[in-house]
Image (tube, rainbow, N blue to C red; front, side, top):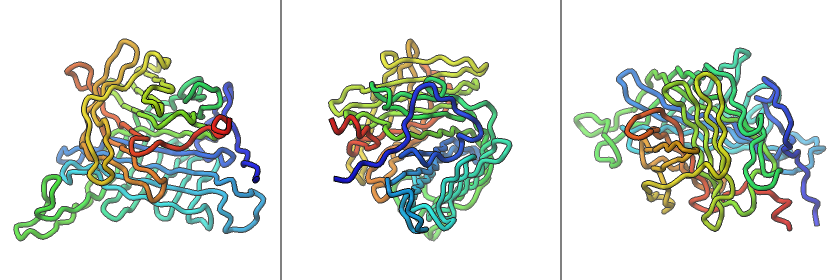
Length: 368
């Protein structure tokens, strides 16, 4: 029997260092850089965007000198939520690292897959470029606040065992500028307002300038989830008063909660953390995907201590069908955030493990 590969482990008390930890950590099994946000066009129309780069260590012999050695995989997802189109449009890519075509560099954020790239400049500004089949993102993300270290100074527990954890920080309240190319519509196509001429011909969606606000997560781990976990509900929200809210619930295969956590940083920088007993996600309304037949709770109530938040999607159809790259589908969508009847912010809701149980599990516990 082959010996399982040994990957670096997440441990409490390890301090994160910037900017070095914004770069890749190839000794860990899984890593991602994930940017989401709300954009506004010059005529005031809202759009949502998402771009994620994943680095996955395969366990292949790191001593293999071949340039073709499949030691690291780079996966990328990009999406645009356009209410005028009526649904999310997305694209996925996957390649082995190498030949300057796909990489995740250590030391500072610089990840690339073909022509898609996310680069962090010395001043902390991110440049994001992704040219997809139906849309394109060309954005600049400028920090307005320091990184938010999740959990205990960046050690973020995801299960009852101490090694079921990740190193995790967020950069909320990023100021966005740049342009997007929106998807075209054809006359008679269902699912949203049509952009077509008087003869019913397809009209290109076109490139438009945008501005907005974004959230960036960077997370790396080797044993992220318990084998008892099926998936998670996650929220990252930029609140209108300058606060930032992150909350997640890891759902068990039996329908219960394996773990939960939330953090609220107010505009002055004060952080309030919430333990598993204080955090919950409660479905308000569901939507069934016509492509995967998966039922997602696209509108939810999120509880953090004594405070209740209501989430409502920009579009119901914001499913990411990425079975060709990650083997699963998930829902990743722009949502408005309310407290009572008041709109207090905008964010992104991620729903994984509803199509089938998600991976990223603890192999040591699974072997017992």
